Image 1 (cartoon, rainbow, N blue to C red):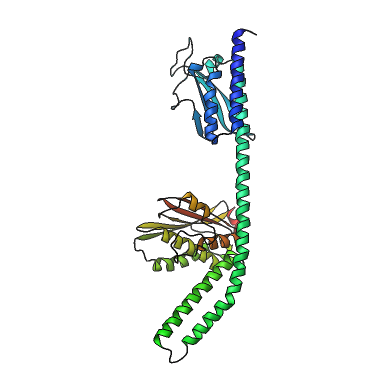
Image 2 (tube, rainbow, N blue to C red):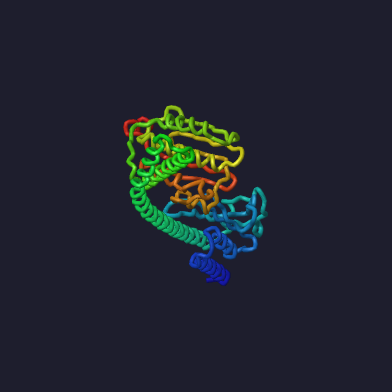
Length: 381
């Protein structure tokens, strides 16, 4: 083997070693790892001072320069496959080379002979290594997400059992308090102050009973009476009362309800509760002027209800806990932290799903997916 060829081979082996070391260390994010990989590729080329490397994965590019060159003397590519699916490419290019002027007319494919066969093999090997590494990173992330999801589900199940037990235990004494307070209010010759106090006791008992009802819904012990339900009708009924009761005159309500939507298999009372809780949550997120937009549509064979607001939004920390029962950012006495937990419980009880997007100072969007009633599902396919 000639000295020149031996030198090129040594550079390629060094490059593969450095790439393997980057993946073995797994230091930093995936983007940071790819940045370190792309930085070592030019050194393995015959003309390292003129070489330029680029890695593209899912539309995101990592390159050795801050700007992508508009032209090159030659370039070669290797497809980047992750789990047998092509998701990008690894590219090596020469911005100029001896005897070949760089410029807009310097051909790509026609000048590819500037790269040695070993350099092509190197590019293929690096591309395969990247594909394996990305697959392992994504598998690890899926495992972490699944474990977090299982821990969350287990925690919610435990809280649900506790909530159901507490609700049942409180129901009877609270009912007695409410009943005797209402009975006392009907008595004659009750002093005004006593009547006022009894009224407050009855109101507090009613509020406590409502909290118990929410606890039972969250624990999914309040059975749903499912029937073919027109979601637009439910939204209109809920919005009529919510708009009338909104204390902030600067809030604007917008309805974008899809026409001709199929009915859903749902309990209309519980779906109305979902709409009410989401809109009240949106109203509380807006301190001054703002807009609340309620939309309905059919997406991928399911009816989607979305409630968007232009309010204060949520930080990532709050967003992670937004559906946790008893979690609230409101002041003491202004919220129970059960509103969104109840929404999630109702949606889950209907076999649906709920997701939220939010950024601080940019508002939030809640999307609820509910199954179409079986008798109408064939109509929208």
